[in-house]
Length: 281
Image (cartoon, rainbow, N blue to C red; front, side, top):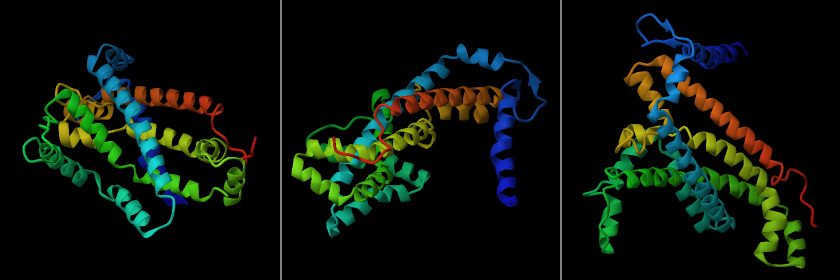
């Protein structure tokens, strides 16, 4: 167990403790650190870009996450039956998960290119003039949402695995009561998938709120800071402005915000998540 323990201490525990200590210092990464107490936290409250990046990130996550889960659920519902066509479609929707971040972002740069991009060329075929995606504040933000929704294959497979473990006997009993989809969804499908939805909501919210590669590679936070996501702003302060202590304070505040939102989600889950065995009422 020692290699795992050493790796945990060196690469996880130590950086966490060190970053927290840095929040009380002013340090550029090279010169001697200067103790400033809670000054970094006070500066955050007066930083308009801090609040803007936080707002943009929360709005982005609140839009992207529900769309991703709903679309993944619908796809899994339609692709649940085994057939060669469904297997091909499952693979097609999952392929984006196999492409690493940088090549995928370069591909999206080409797709959304104003002059010769695939998306605007398709729009021109039906007589619509495509917008300047990454040069307009609104369209740049929308493009970030589209790019993130593209990678929903993982959630789709999780829903598919959940559908396939629903007992067929229970489905047959439901058919005797009522063959409507509404009845089956209420008494069979939703009780079984509610823990999965809750899991995807927790993991997805934390994951989407840490969006970075899109802003770093495609927009660099622009135009006019419309895609200045929180993690990218932390990166800028740490490695562009060399404000290590200030960036660490930002990261810890963001951690506390995510912790609070996650705690609220856990509290609300007891009103709609079903962990017991599904029973007909």
